[in-house]
Image (cartoon, rainbow, N blue to C red; front, side, top):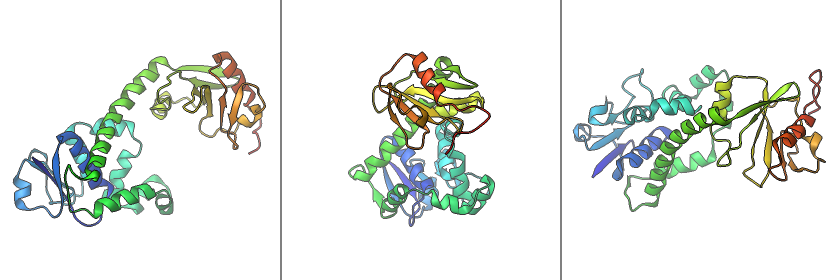
Length: 283
Protein backbone atom coordinates (compact mmCIF):
# COMPACT_ATOMS: atom_id res chain seq x y z
CA UNK A 1 0.00 0.00 0.00
CA UNK A 2 1.13 3.55 -0.70
CA UNK A 3 1.99 5.93 2.12
CA UNK A 4 1.69 9.71 2.18
CA UNK A 5 3.79 11.76 4.57
CA UNK A 6 2.78 15.35 5.40
CA UNK A 7 4.24 17.64 8.03
CA UNK A 8 2.97 17.60 11.63
CA UNK A 9 1.64 20.60 13.54
CA UNK A 10 -0.62 23.22 12.01
CA UNK A 11 -2.15 22.15 8.72
CA UNK A 12 -2.46 24.45 5.73
CA UNK A 13 -4.29 24.38 2.42
CA UNK A 14 -1.08 23.31 0.72
CA UNK A 15 -0.60 20.01 2.53
CA UNK A 16 -4.34 19.31 2.86
CA UNK A 17 -4.96 19.68 -0.85
CA UNK A 18 -1.81 17.78 -1.78
CA UNK A 19 -2.88 14.81 0.30
CA UNK A 20 -6.46 15.00 -1.02
CA UNK A 21 -5.35 14.93 -4.65
CA UNK A 22 -3.01 12.01 -3.99
CA UNK A 23 -5.73 10.05 -2.21
CA UNK A 24 -7.99 10.59 -5.22
CA UNK A 25 -5.26 9.46 -7.60
CA UNK A 26 -3.63 6.59 -5.75
CA UNK A 27 -6.90 4.90 -4.85
CA UNK A 28 -5.79 3.93 -1.35
CA UNK A 29 -2.97 5.01 0.91
CA UNK A 30 -2.11 5.50 4.56
CA UNK A 31 -1.50 9.10 5.60
CA UNK A 32 1.00 10.04 8.30
CA UNK A 33 1.49 13.55 9.67
CA UNK A 34 5.09 13.55 10.89
CA UNK A 35 8.59 14.48 9.81
CA UNK A 36 9.93 12.55 6.83
CA UNK A 37 12.79 10.10 7.30
CA UNK A 38 15.54 9.26 4.83
CA UNK A 39 13.76 5.95 4.24
CA UNK A 40 10.55 7.82 3.35
CA UNK A 41 12.40 9.99 0.86
CA UNK A 42 14.05 6.98 -0.79
CA UNK A 43 10.92 4.84 -1.01
CA UNK A 44 9.03 5.39 -4.31
CA UNK A 45 5.86 3.98 -2.71
CA UNK A 46 5.93 6.82 -0.19
CA UNK A 47 4.75 10.24 -1.31
CA UNK A 48 6.31 13.00 0.79
CA UNK A 49 4.52 16.36 0.51
CA UNK A 50 5.39 19.76 1.97
CA UNK A 51 8.09 18.27 4.18
CA UNK A 52 11.44 16.55 3.76
CA UNK A 53 13.45 19.36 2.13
CA UNK A 54 13.56 17.54 -1.20
CA UNK A 55 11.90 17.92 -4.58
CA UNK A 56 12.32 14.79 -6.64
CA UNK A 57 9.12 13.83 -8.50
CA UNK A 58 10.59 10.54 -9.71
CA UNK A 59 10.96 9.47 -6.08
CA UNK A 60 7.64 11.16 -5.20
CA UNK A 61 9.14 13.85 -2.99
CA UNK A 62 7.30 17.19 -3.21
CA UNK A 63 8.73 19.76 -0.81
CA UNK A 64 9.49 23.37 -1.72
CA UNK A 65 10.95 24.85 1.45
CA UNK A 66 14.55 24.19 0.38
CA UNK A 67 14.24 26.20 -2.86
CA UNK A 68 12.73 29.70 -3.00
CA UNK A 69 12.07 29.37 -6.74
CA UNK A 70 9.64 26.47 -6.31
CA UNK A 71 5.88 26.90 -5.96
CA UNK A 72 3.89 25.29 -3.16
CA UNK A 73 3.77 21.51 -2.75
CA UNK A 74 0.23 21.33 -4.12
CA UNK A 75 1.40 22.86 -7.40
CA UNK A 76 4.31 20.41 -7.52
CA UNK A 77 1.95 17.48 -7.05
CA UNK A 78 -0.46 18.87 -9.65
CA UNK A 79 2.42 19.24 -12.12
CA UNK A 80 3.44 15.65 -11.56
CA UNK A 81 -0.12 14.41 -12.08
CA UNK A 82 -0.60 16.50 -15.21
CA UNK A 83 -3.37 18.79 -13.92
CA UNK A 84 -1.38 21.96 -13.23
CA UNK A 85 -1.81 23.87 -16.48
CA UNK A 86 -5.54 23.16 -16.66
CA UNK A 87 -6.06 24.20 -13.03
CA UNK A 88 -4.08 27.38 -13.64
CA UNK A 89 -6.37 28.20 -16.56
CA UNK A 90 -9.73 27.58 -14.89
CA UNK A 91 -9.29 28.62 -11.23
CA UNK A 92 -8.59 32.26 -10.50
CA UNK A 93 -7.44 31.45 -6.95
CA UNK A 94 -5.00 28.72 -7.96
CA UNK A 95 -1.89 30.84 -8.60
CA UNK A 96 -2.53 33.07 -5.60
CA UNK A 97 -2.83 30.08 -3.28
CA UNK A 98 0.78 29.18 -4.02
CA UNK A 99 1.87 32.77 -3.52
CA UNK A 100 0.15 32.86 -0.13
CA UNK A 101 1.88 29.68 0.95
CA UNK A 102 5.35 30.55 -0.38
CA UNK A 103 5.53 34.33 0.14
CA UNK A 104 2.90 34.91 2.82
CA UNK A 105 -0.11 37.23 3.02
CA UNK A 106 1.78 40.53 3.07
CA UNK A 107 3.72 39.92 -0.15
CA UNK A 108 0.60 38.47 -1.78
CA UNK A 109 -1.50 41.49 -0.80
CA UNK A 110 1.20 43.78 -2.19
CA UNK A 111 1.21 41.84 -5.49
CA UNK A 112 -2.60 42.03 -5.71
CA UNK A 113 -2.62 45.72 -4.84
CA UNK A 114 -4.84 45.33 -1.79
CA UNK A 115 -4.48 45.84 1.95
CA UNK A 116 -3.50 42.73 3.89
CA UNK A 117 -6.58 43.11 6.08
CA UNK A 118 -8.73 42.27 3.03
CA UNK A 119 -7.07 38.85 2.73
CA UNK A 120 -7.62 38.16 6.43
CA UNK A 121 -11.23 39.37 6.27
CA UNK A 122 -11.97 37.03 3.37
CA UNK A 123 -10.67 33.92 5.11
CA UNK A 124 -13.31 31.22 5.51
CA UNK A 125 -14.35 29.70 8.87
CA UNK A 126 -15.08 26.49 6.92
CA UNK A 127 -11.46 26.33 5.77
CA UNK A 128 -10.32 26.98 9.33
CA UNK A 129 -12.44 24.19 10.78
CA UNK A 130 -11.39 21.57 8.22
CA UNK A 131 -7.71 22.43 8.55
CA UNK A 132 -8.01 22.36 12.34
CA UNK A 133 -9.45 18.84 12.12
CA UNK A 134 -6.59 17.75 9.86
CA UNK A 135 -4.07 19.32 12.25
CA UNK A 136 -5.24 17.08 15.08
CA UNK A 137 -4.56 13.88 13.17
CA UNK A 138 -1.36 11.87 13.29
CA UNK A 139 -2.48 9.07 11.03
CA UNK A 140 -5.32 8.58 8.56
CA UNK A 141 -6.59 5.30 7.11
CA UNK A 142 -9.51 4.20 4.98
CA UNK A 143 -11.48 3.42 8.12
CA UNK A 144 -11.50 7.08 9.16
CA UNK A 145 -14.39 9.31 8.08
CA UNK A 146 -12.01 12.19 7.39
CA UNK A 147 -10.16 9.99 4.90
CA UNK A 148 -13.33 9.72 2.83
CA UNK A 149 -13.89 13.46 2.97
CA UNK A 150 -10.39 14.22 1.72
CA UNK A 151 -10.49 11.61 -1.02
CA UNK A 152 -13.89 12.82 -2.26
CA UNK A 153 -12.63 16.39 -2.18
CA UNK A 154 -9.66 15.42 -4.34
CA UNK A 155 -11.86 13.47 -6.76
CA UNK A 156 -14.30 16.36 -7.05
CA UNK A 157 -11.47 18.83 -7.63
CA UNK A 158 -9.94 16.82 -10.46
CA UNK A 159 -13.37 16.27 -12.01
CA UNK A 160 -14.17 19.98 -11.77
CA UNK A 161 -11.04 20.91 -13.73
CA UNK A 162 -12.25 18.80 -16.63
CA UNK A 163 -15.86 19.93 -16.32
CA UNK A 164 -14.92 23.60 -16.43
CA UNK A 165 -12.79 23.13 -19.55
CA UNK A 166 -15.56 21.18 -21.33
CA UNK A 167 -18.20 23.71 -20.31
CA UNK A 168 -16.10 26.60 -21.56
CA UNK A 169 -15.89 24.99 -24.98
CA UNK A 170 -19.65 24.41 -24.96
CA UNK A 171 -20.33 28.01 -23.98
CA UNK A 172 -18.16 29.20 -26.87
CA UNK A 173 -20.28 27.15 -29.29
CA UNK A 174 -23.78 27.72 -27.88
CA UNK A 175 -23.88 31.10 -26.16
CA UNK A 176 -25.67 33.97 -27.86
CA UNK A 177 -24.67 37.62 -27.47
CA UNK A 178 -27.69 39.80 -28.18
CA UNK A 179 -28.25 43.57 -28.12
CA UNK A 180 -30.35 45.08 -25.33
CA UNK A 181 -30.69 48.83 -25.87
CA UNK A 182 -27.12 50.18 -25.99
CA UNK A 183 -25.73 47.16 -24.10
CA UNK A 184 -25.49 43.42 -24.77
CA UNK A 185 -26.84 40.33 -23.03
CA UNK A 186 -25.25 36.93 -22.83
CA UNK A 187 -27.80 34.15 -23.26
CA UNK A 188 -27.08 30.53 -22.36
CA UNK A 189 -29.80 27.87 -22.33
CA UNK A 190 -27.69 25.26 -20.48
CA UNK A 191 -29.79 24.11 -17.52
CA UNK A 192 -27.27 21.92 -15.68
CA UNK A 193 -25.18 24.19 -13.45
CA UNK A 194 -25.71 27.15 -15.80
CA UNK A 195 -23.06 29.40 -14.22
CA UNK A 196 -20.26 26.85 -14.58
CA UNK A 197 -17.26 28.45 -16.38
CA UNK A 198 -19.27 31.59 -17.10
CA UNK A 199 -16.48 33.74 -15.65
CA UNK A 200 -13.99 32.06 -17.98
CA UNK A 201 -16.21 32.65 -20.99
CA UNK A 202 -16.65 36.33 -20.11
CA UNK A 203 -12.90 36.70 -19.63
CA UNK A 204 -12.20 35.19 -23.02
CA UNK A 205 -14.96 37.24 -24.63
CA UNK A 206 -13.47 40.49 -23.34
CA UNK A 207 -16.49 42.60 -24.35
CA UNK A 208 -17.26 45.38 -21.84
CA UNK A 209 -20.67 45.95 -23.44
CA UNK A 210 -21.88 42.54 -22.26
CA UNK A 211 -23.59 43.67 -19.07
CA UNK A 212 -26.36 41.08 -18.52
CA UNK A 213 -26.46 37.30 -18.38
CA UNK A 214 -29.66 35.34 -19.00
CA UNK A 215 -29.58 31.71 -17.90
CA UNK A 216 -32.04 29.12 -16.59
CA UNK A 217 -32.64 29.59 -12.88
CA UNK A 218 -31.40 26.90 -10.51
CA UNK A 219 -34.19 27.84 -8.09
CA UNK A 220 -37.47 27.68 -9.94
CA UNK A 221 -38.62 27.15 -13.50
CA UNK A 222 -37.83 30.54 -15.01
CA UNK A 223 -34.90 32.57 -16.27
CA UNK A 224 -32.34 34.30 -14.08
CA UNK A 225 -31.44 37.76 -15.36
CA UNK A 226 -28.23 39.04 -13.78
CA UNK A 227 -26.29 42.26 -14.21
CA UNK A 228 -22.59 41.75 -14.76
CA UNK A 229 -19.74 43.79 -13.34
CA UNK A 230 -22.22 45.59 -11.07
CA UNK A 231 -23.13 47.89 -13.96
CA UNK A 232 -25.25 50.59 -12.31
CA UNK A 233 -27.03 51.39 -15.54
CA UNK A 234 -29.01 48.23 -14.79
CA UNK A 235 -31.44 47.95 -11.89
CA UNK A 236 -34.01 45.17 -11.93
CA UNK A 237 -36.10 46.90 -9.27
CA UNK A 238 -37.55 48.72 -12.26
CA UNK A 239 -39.35 45.50 -13.33
CA UNK A 240 -40.51 44.29 -9.91
CA UNK A 241 -44.17 44.78 -10.86
CA UNK A 242 -43.89 43.06 -14.23
CA UNK A 243 -46.38 40.13 -14.34
CA UNK A 244 -43.73 37.77 -15.69
CA UNK A 245 -41.35 38.39 -12.78
CA UNK A 246 -41.49 36.27 -9.62
CA UNK A 247 -38.45 37.65 -7.78
CA UNK A 248 -36.23 40.73 -7.79
CA UNK A 249 -33.30 41.03 -5.41
CA UNK A 250 -33.70 43.92 -2.98
CA UNK A 251 -30.46 45.46 -4.28
CA UNK A 252 -31.59 45.24 -7.88
CA UNK A 253 -28.77 43.18 -9.36
CA UNK A 254 -30.87 40.16 -10.28
CA UNK A 255 -34.37 39.14 -11.30
CA UNK A 256 -36.11 35.84 -12.02
CA UNK A 257 -39.04 35.13 -14.28
CA UNK A 258 -42.02 32.94 -13.44
CA UNK A 259 -41.34 30.55 -16.32
CA UNK A 260 -39.00 29.99 -19.23
CA UNK A 261 -40.82 32.54 -21.32
CA UNK A 262 -39.75 33.22 -24.93
CA UNK A 263 -36.34 34.83 -25.23
CA UNK A 264 -37.81 37.93 -26.88
CA UNK A 265 -39.91 38.53 -23.75
CA UNK A 266 -36.89 38.13 -21.43
CA UNK A 267 -34.90 40.63 -23.48
CA UNK A 268 -37.80 43.07 -23.30
CA UNK A 269 -37.88 42.76 -19.50
CA UNK A 270 -34.13 43.25 -19.35
CA UNK A 271 -34.39 46.37 -21.50
CA UNK A 272 -36.84 47.91 -19.03
CA UNK A 273 -34.18 47.62 -16.30
CA UNK A 274 -31.57 49.55 -18.29
CA UNK A 275 -31.34 53.25 -17.59
CA UNK A 276 -30.50 55.94 -20.09
CA UNK A 277 -26.73 55.83 -20.76
CA UNK A 278 -26.44 59.51 -19.86
CA UNK A 279 -27.38 58.87 -16.26
CA UNK A 280 -27.18 56.18 -13.64
CA UNK A 281 -30.08 54.76 -11.66
CA UNK A 282 -30.01 55.53 -7.93
CA UNK A 283 -28.36 52.99 -5.70
